[in-house]
Image (cartoon, helix red, strand yellow):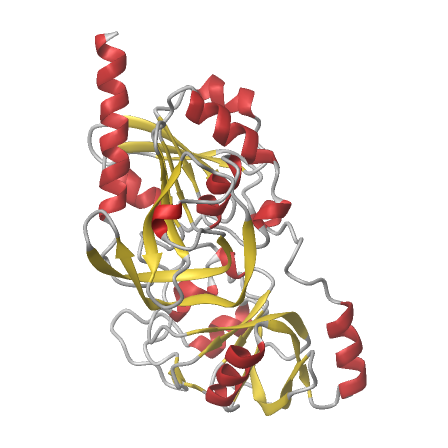
Length: 379
């Protein structure tokens, strides 16, 4: 199947322009421009709901060399608003490949651009911060595109999680003997997270982000998983009360990414927008309790506001303790409650894409479920 490659450009809201050629569908795409430093895992990036509303730049210069397949998807269809690469491989080479990146983007209507200086773009975003932008064919005037970019909503204050959440409840059955029942709030959940819980004997009921506290109680779960997701955590209010009340009832809760931010906010913490966010599969995080460093997969534009040092705790949330720190910028990467069975991390321990250093966190969640079950049995 022949593809048409048209002159295309990327325009940032500060006026910086990058010219290249089309990749995927030819059209206009608007969103927040961010960069991802992963060398592999581009299909997981494309299908990660946390990238909703964003034009994702891959810093690795050659993308698409091993093609795409049905197994590496984190959701059924791509979630990114647009895709930006230096060079897209024309001929993928892998025994797992079921198609090319170009065909995949075209089939799913994703607008992209290739052939631009992604190094220069990344350095610009690092200096000036993530900002709104647009991808458009060269025959769209720069004035017209800039008008559309400036009218596009900013990420701050945007509740995107509810828009990507499932609209119906569904179950992922436990593998082997069922040991526990976990309810997973879907704010943009990646397929790998319920899968890892299922591998550990959990039947996982994935529920819409708008599911009420009373509905959760009726399901009588052994534990709650709060998923990743896009947008501003300050704009997501429905789950805050449920997190707090279920935790106070003794229900173990584990959150990642947006779920981490929502758990922190449920106990009084503040969140804020990072200059250009953390996006990649190579972020070093120090686990304070184990005094070791994990290489982690990350994708977030907001963070939990911490104190001057880990010992200072979390301002506004005196019962939360810092457990993990980002070694790039010192931001809070993990917390746990001092009295309740609640903990969370800012990164993606399901490692899709990324290293497997942090999968122990799912085992830690299982330990909390076991303790609760044992306590209920002896009561």
